[in-house]
Length: 228
Image: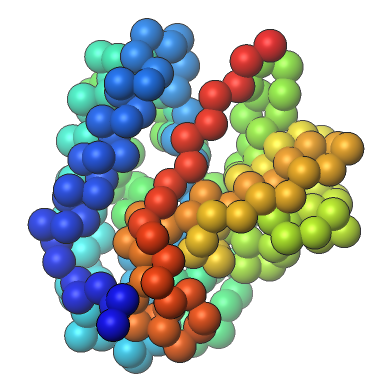
């Protein structure tokens, strides 16, 4: 029925494929940038997911260990790697979404463990947001990342402009291009000020997707190259 039974082996295969594409397509680049934009762990949300995931505490440690191994292998491919992390709404520790909790939820714990596991790699830097927004400069372009549970930009020009205003308000930066998550499927919208891109979902459809209109979505992640 296009619903994924939780299977750690499938998860490893999909992440392995993602990282192999990244290696084979971008080997030798000076800098790799990873945006982890939330909904990586299931916390207090959606009872329908309880039977399809690991216990939350176990998943936090196991996923951090798995991703750390892949990112460590990338450290010999790129001159440096910058990882930017923002929590989503699935990692929440309260029944209602509260932006103030993005600095104190299961996602934040996951990011702290991931950072600790990568601490021995001097060319890997971890940037963990407590505001829900992150930004970095790639070439001469400011690129922002957020989850998208507060504003969703990758659907219309007006929504993208609102997201850009949020970055200016929270971080004080003019973000040209913005990555976001939340909607679990790839989408994008381009404007005269820059693009807003939703990066998709590595797991595709699950029971959450069935009840929220994301049935039969293929697993996908977005890899983008910036060049002059």
